[in-house]
Amino acid sequence: MILNENVDRKIIPVAGGKGGVGKSVIAANLALSMCLYGKKTILVDLDLGGSNIHTLLGLRNINPGIGNFVSNRKYSINELLSPTEWENLYFIPGDVLVYGIGELNKSVKARIIKGLLDIEADYIIVDLGGGTNFTVIDFFLISNSGLIVTTPQAISIMNAYSFLKNYVFRFLQRVFAADKLISSYFRKTLKERQPGDRKTVTDMISDIKSIDSTLGNKADAFLEVLQPKLILNRIVGIEDASLAEGLRDLCAQNLSINLEGLGTVMNEEIVNRSVNLQRPFILDNEENIATAEIHRIAQKIIQSGNFPKMPLELDYYADSFELIHIEMENDLAAIQGNVKNTDSQVNYDVDKLLELIRIQQGKIQELQGTVRMLSISE
Ligand SMILES: Nc1ncnc2c1ncn2[C@@H]1O[C@H](COP(=O)(O)OP(=O)(O)OP(=O)(O)O)[C@@H](O)[C@H]1O
Ligand SMILES: [Mg+2]
Image (tube, rainbow, N blue to C red):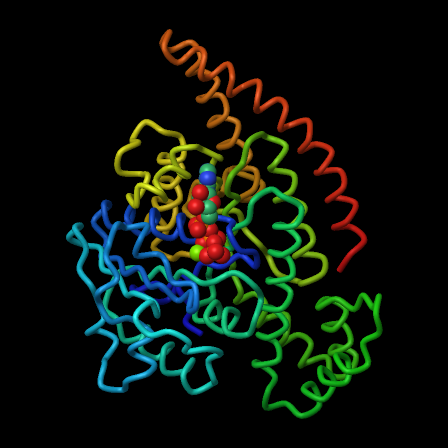
């Protein structure tokens, strides 16, 4: 694992636990935004079996990618860098040209990870697939500061939580792999698990402390290394913030990790449309709120030379989620402000507002259900 704060070249994997939450569309637009700010950025499609990110950039799938790298040792990772129409943005395709590379074994994963570490760039954004399988988790563990994308839907929040739970647990298993006592404790705990058992990572750490207090403290110190960041996508109303805060609290209580909020992206039709148009939405929609939000996330990363440590202004807020809350209020006010802007926008925006109110009512019910669920399930 690389610690992003200590290196110039930062690797930022993007995952989420659930399919279709917007990981790829955010990864592609974020990479482009960083390149437009002058940073040499590489976008890597590591959603093996479901590689499609080239289409989001409007590229044809004619170049060798990770699939070829895996199946043919003659390729070096740097040969896979495809230029794009933007000077500072390069792309590494997935496995569209090589079908069925299947589950990756340990040595193949290690080769890909070593390859990624050899790339020269400012930022390497790695788009991962959905799900919580070991391949996705191992790629997410390439660095200590991956991005978790979720929508405010209860199921998506739950999947993000499951992903984080498996990620923290796999990390601890690795960290203590050489320690016989703790490894056997982990094995025993997993084996003896009964349906309905609610042993959390936090419980396990207290167990470890009672086995050996030095090792328990070591576990606490290791967990501080993990700095995943949350992006809440497809938001429609301010109450969506509470779901993200619920996830943050659950991570703190049950997983002993500090999940920080990096930003939000509104649910906008132009995002949807851009996928069909095969063109990153930030290009032709400069005035759109979702574009501003992507640039804001890119700036937060770029302005923090020590990313994942957040930029300085964060000192003024209780935590990153308070800042996100304020940003969301401003974004929603900006959309509502548009109603007054031009006659031609009136109908569109009034309809949109009515729709927002309708969705919000549903969301509040969903929110109540989710908060109940989050508080009772592990
Ligand atoms: N902010 C948004 N507003 C509107 N639509 C969105 C937004 N974000 C994502 N979408 C829609 O969701 C779809 C899925 O997005 P995307 O392919 O990026 O998800 P994903 O998480 O990468 O999925 P997979 O797990 O299959 O790789 C997009 O095609 C787009 O239509
Ligand atoms: Mg995807």
